[in-house]
Image: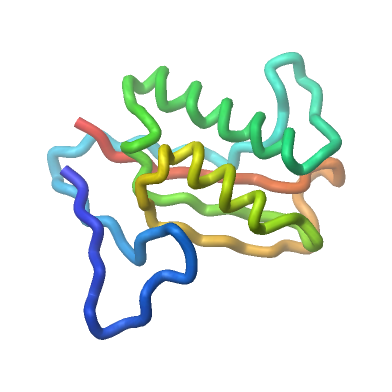
Length: 128
């Protein structure tokens, strides 16, 4: 079971995410590594929009292999290089999460491990 934690004595989240998610000890956990925009054929799309699509497709594949679904995601950590469209990033996250809320961290970094990568995302999922 997962429950959003919303303390009354702190400001509301700045976007569509939860400050915290409480899970039960009976949950099955999945922790991904940083998922980068490498398509199944080994290519990296040049544009930010397609890189986000590839990353979330790869995350969905990991969830499905673990018999989990996007609504099991409890935390998202995103690393993005400067000058990317953060509204597009949040739109893709919200769509991929099927509009449920997860804890979320966004970090702007100077670069990622390969210069063509514009974004990297890791997730934690908890299911039964």
